[in-house]
Image (tube, rainbow, N blue to C red; front, side, top):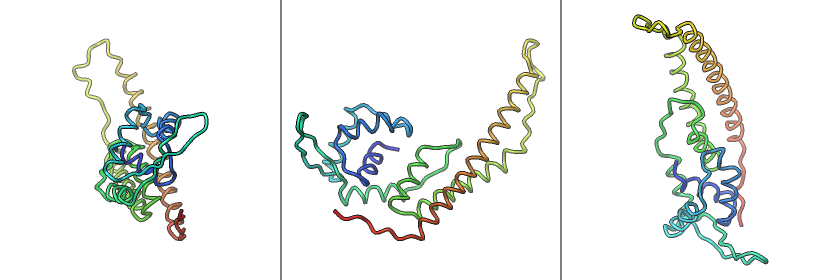
Length: 195
């Protein structure tokens, strides 16, 4: 996922200065893989502004330099909608940050798309579970060297398998709960705030 999309989505909800965005990234960005350098953020903000996806107003501040306070334009919202509608392929690992972010943006802009992404992930994981849970996990030790501790390896792999199953099951339960919650929200009509 590009930093462009992350910036646009944050500015969909609130107006922020570049400084505020960098501070947010240092605190919260690390949890979604976006702890970026300030120079990178400012470069992207300039590009997005030049592309007409963001606008800014200069805010006068006492005892601090004036700040450009950014907000998203209609073109920026359209760019987010296009990204949200673009193809997403589930990854071979759980907890893909891009999927979580797509669901979050979907919750903001297009609840049916968020539900569709969750359904896609659930179907993919269900197929993966069916394919992998009962597979033969035996290790061919025909040519193992005498110093190789096969019993330890087999025990470790079995424990990893049990743990992987547990994690997958908890993830699936969470996705089902998330889907139910968003489905309940889709029944509500929330009027957008106007400035």
